[in-house]
Length: 210
Image (cartoon, rainbow, N blue to C red):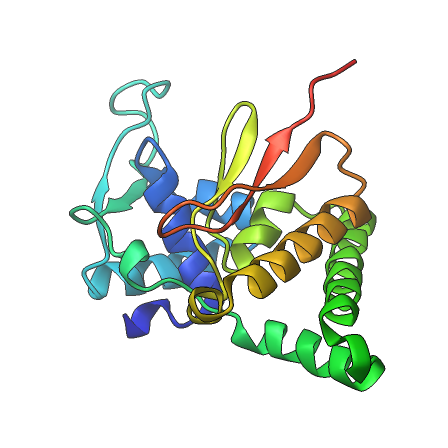
């Protein structure tokens, strides 16, 4: 579990676990915008921790005996990502603190405004820098899974608070993600409240082209 504390290493681990094939260092490095050497370092640390396994495999499109056989990585066993979900309580705490300071007489409404604005700011950065939205959501702890018609968010970064104050926290989460999608200019995605046991209360549904 300690091997997954580093955010970059956690992102690489999740990427390998989600892949439907053994992943090379080069593929993982390109997907996360890291250098090959840093990617190899993190992947090998995950192998040392028993979270991934590695072997050498010739690519299907490479003639046998030609070139160096690359090292590839895949999940060891059935993975442990679900047992160590990432939490982001500091984010919700900052939103609530700002809301109380802004409007103590109607803190819930102020919190929704702050949550949406915080999300919009992150989304605008995604739009301006061209970052991958799914990667940003992964970095925020949502464990996104991109499907053909929606993006499922497999983890709630605010789990404990959401179980105690479900309506409030899920409402803030929805406002945050709505702001993020709006700020990113992603008119093809619509955040919807869709609670599921053990997952985020929001999913991102695809909007059909008109």
